[in-house]
Length: 436
Image (cartoon, rainbow, N blue to C red):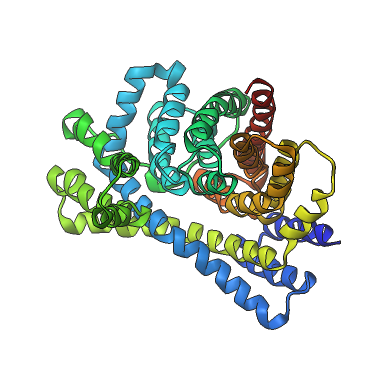
């Protein structure tokens, strides 16, 4: 019955947005309250769940998305995106530009949290799309597939790193196996699948559209690349430093400076000079660009807040534990069972991290009894936690709103891409299990 209520609420959300044409943020609040009532959450607790969900998701994302939008707008307006697009096209050409973006997404995705990577890479994707008149989804999806795979499969991302510790797995081996699995997952879900979406019409978010500047007005290639990728450099340096045996006092400073919000703030301060003041813009002009960027993504923030409200209501109802306990009695291969539990919780609740950590708690005793390879179990659950992202996942809405797609288009592109990643990940885990 619980599953039917969850499915019914998700269908209601889709109908309110697509058929009734209700703003997604309002629709999320209506469905969250209705879902809480149907799942038996006390009335006095429903509003608390809604507020907590909105606060938690915005608390972790708002600064990243806002700073990312400001940075993206400045990168576009300064001509840095145009310069980077020219460099990328010179290296890979129109024929292989997808592969260039995939490689960039994979490298960037290893040190960066997914949401940071998304808001940093979208301006680069759009600059290539607009300058060379290429289909947005066809060009952008492969890079985002690479970001998604690194988020779900590879330490030091939060969920796989936590699973490594919980299962007492080997971080190095898990990372190595994860990279082996990541390559086919990215290729099939990215360039191969997006090849079927060449005719999908998309007019991406206008915030990152800028007029082509003459070559002598553009920042240099090194300035453009270093400014746009400074968060990657900072987080990568922090990760490398963490592999040593740092002094405890200095370690706490590095830990603080490597927080995504702090990294993005430092980046914005630096690029305000390198791509703004240094390029002849006044501080007033730069701040006008930043205000314009925030206006462009305000509704995206509200929609993400709404998805957080629904996620929290579902989490507080205990639906994830009910699903996990029901599946735990099935006599499946532990690697398949771990993937299945994570996948169903992901589809029901929307959060990859919640899906992964909940599945880990349920599957741990079964895994120990069966002597399952803990490194492969981390990857199996990580793959399952990416399964079929849809309306209860903030990532779904970020992709939809940034690329300005319909619900149907987003499901056919984003949701299917995530499903391919999850299924290929499981198949790869099972194959590795035969070999190691």
